[in-house]
Image 1 (cartoon, rainbow, N blue to C red):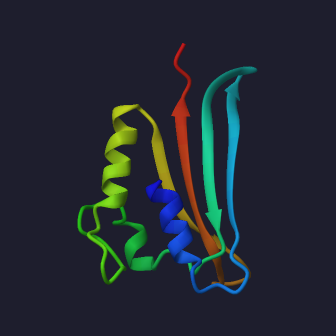
Image 2 (cartoon, rainbow, N blue to C red):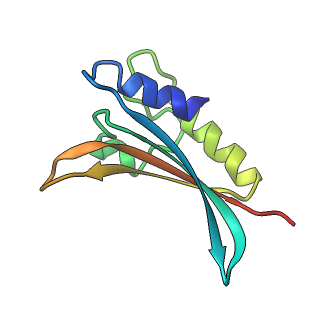
Length: 109
């Protein structure tokens, strides 16, 4: 819920907010090896200063935030051998069109 909540908050002041959640099988040699879940929004994106440190505790851009949400999400995903990445969705030039969070969950046989 933390990731979706972040997208909802980021889009709160957007005229036509859009949040897209996708899942996709990732395969090698035709055998599913992972599942990728992507959450994209058309909010303002991540501040450049936050991108490299977003998973560190107490890093926040919210006035009432603790900066513990993303570090907790990453810790849980690490325990399940999943990988998480965040990025801004780039438009023309330096225009940011939104944010993207991708999680890759390994398939367990």
